[in-house]
Length: 311
Image (cartoon, rainbow, N blue to C red; front, side):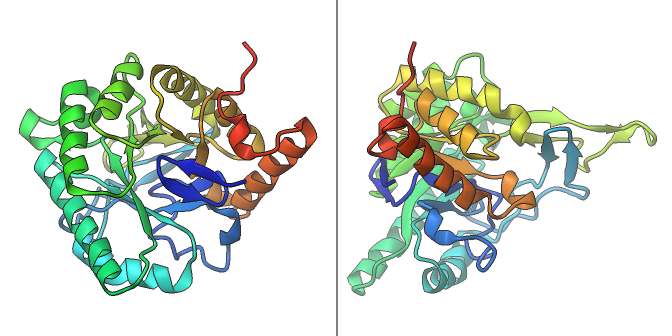
């Protein structure tokens, strides 16, 4: 069941998606961590961030629209408190999701994580921090709010800047709301990414018709859940055709079926997110389901599923 995601060794091809699993320890006792190949922490930036006003969630048929606004404690507190606590309680590689408002902020956040890992090594300790994931679905304050992930040139510059600051495996989490994902996947690859995460939530809006106002305090949010899965499968398929990078697929994994679809479309591993809210056991079900599928269909390893699509 082990896979290699751009240098990140995973015991299983199942990870958790950023923003749905806290900082990695919140589900202790509720989730079988032995079924996970990696855990992606809630996004961090240089400074603490308050996030968006309430309400932040709206349930919709087949999914969830959220506008948390990337609320977080900042990278210093994350490294000082959350990571050590995680390392004492969990034995699964940690993917640190980072974001920022400028290219320089992304780079500085990555540099501080790299320094933390280096310090642990000098102390003769092994850090659980296994990779960095860049969330590029953020507004670039120096470009009038234009999103990093919607301009291949800015995306390339951001990934290249982070690449200079870290030796950790680098995963780029691409935005889904682009005409074609191929040029963005190529820009990330050319800038030094080790893997891609495909993809983030889809821009969405829910209206309370009785109040005649948006259901979310931020007015709009990101759509996740089973309803986005077919669209996300196509993005994974297109990205796999465009580049040679391994892919962590995200979007609507609620059972082994969706995970296997992603892997056949080209994913090396899958991230489970929204489904964990209603069924914490889903990570174990997905892992066991992939293993059972491999047994039934004669695959010696889960990695053999990647891109194994009859066309």
